[in-house]
Image 1 (tube, rainbow, N blue to C red):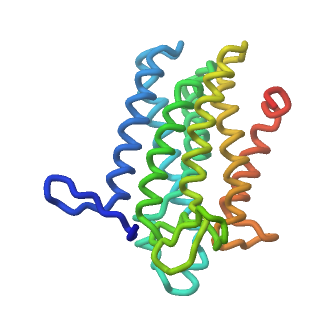
Image 2 (image 1 turned 60 degrees about the vertical axis):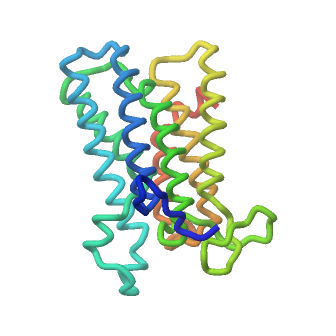
Length: 242
């Protein structure tokens, strides 16, 4: 397989990353809107909450991407404009969206937990997006460290690496099925999202140890530090759910 794996659509050769990213956004947003209609939030307030989450997610994704790749700025491999336009992180988007939704709900005086409507859409959207990351290859910088395991993948630099993008796809699919099983048990409003967030943040903290990212503090990357901060935020839920 030669990376990036371009898609042939209507005779046109299209890069896989924007295709799968667009599909991920479309599917997750449609699912979230459908599930959010069943919440107890007033219809006129639902759109505002979603906008608050999207705004926080976009800011968080960009901000954490810049911090994560400060090493590239220092070496001159990429400039600030390129990083701001192209760089995004799922962890930053998740934490930023949580912050944006909570701030919006505080302003609207909404006390109802709304996270459950977004758990499955985010899981499915992440899995779809990571397929695009895998097909993109080296330029996406989401690949893993070198490995001698039989499923290692050569993304184009003649080095067999952990396909961490596919690890994440498998994890998200497994988490989706586990949440469906967990739904059979009694849970508080918002617990499905909390459980998803805790599991994903813990997974990303662990998996990023086998990614060749810039590990700036005590052998950890900015994304891993953000994951730990997110887990601290959910510490009370962790005691109850895990």
